[in-house]
Length: 118
Image (cartoon, rainbow, N blue to C red; front, side, top):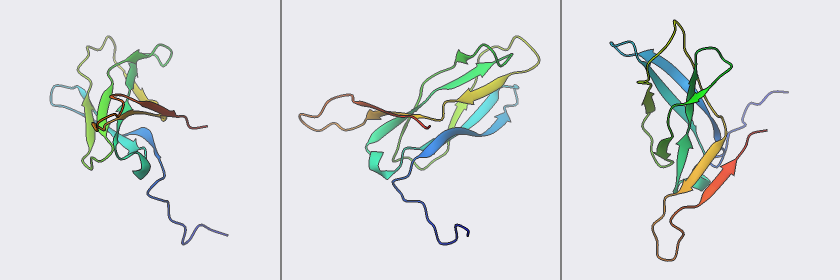
C-alpha cells in the first residue's frame, strides 16, 4: 500500500523552511528560504521570518522577508549581523503569514491570513 499515482494539488501549501545555507567569501551565512502558500494565495505576499541563535535557547528575529507567491526564483536572505561566538544557528517558522497583494478599487490595502501547521 504505497502512494504511487498520488499527486499533490497546486493548492497545497509547502511549509516554510531553510532549504540551504552557504557562506559568502566574507563568512556571512546566506540562507535559501523555501516554501509557499499554494496557488489559492497567488495574489498574496508570503512573509518569512528568519531567526538566529548562538545557544538554541535565545532566538533573535533577523528580518521579515517578503515574497510574492507568484515568484518562481529562489528566495535568499543574507545574515549580516555580527556574531559573538564560534557557532550560529538559524531557523524560520514553518507556518505562513500572508498579506494581500491586490490593488483593486474597494479592496483592503492589507489583509492578513495566518495558517498554522499542526
